[in-house]
Image (cartoon, rainbow, N blue to C red; front, side):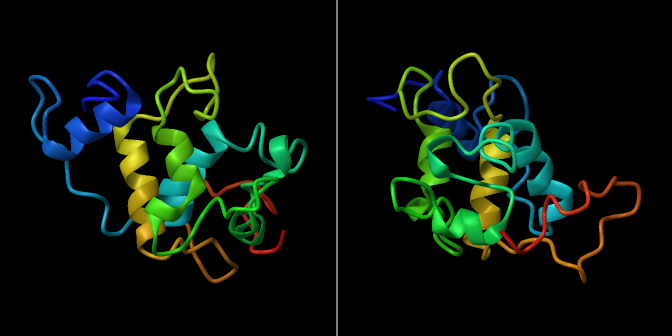
Amino acid sequence: MLTHGSTTPFGMLANALRGRNGDSPPPEPPLAAATFVTSVAPILDAHCVECHGPEKQKHGLRLDSREAALKGGESGKPAIVPGNALASVIVEAITLPPANQRAMPPEGKPRLTPEQVVTLIDWINRGAEWADATQRAAVGVEPPSPGRWSTAS
């Protein structure tokens, strides 16, 4: 908090994890049943795949397939390290202060909410399970576009 402040995404995440959301009640604990299709894919769709998807791969990074995310981009570091959110480049990028050149999404794009950051961290720490042909979407939740969230890169 000393270096980043409480109004940065990292500071807001820290406050959310501590239950300090102003006058609002403490947040729910991380989603124990968070699934890729219902919780993670919508975040990646809204904040990541425009620049790191099938049409465009800024810095050589794709986040629309598990293999590509595990491989990483030009940095050579994996974007996602299943079971270890702190070693995942994506977690570093989404928690950097917005003024940092490596912060994601970049300036001018909507930032992830603290709850979305916690969802990604929880999902990665739980093994970063990806959608496959056997995983079903929850009732009432629209499935992702065909092919977008396949296990192949």
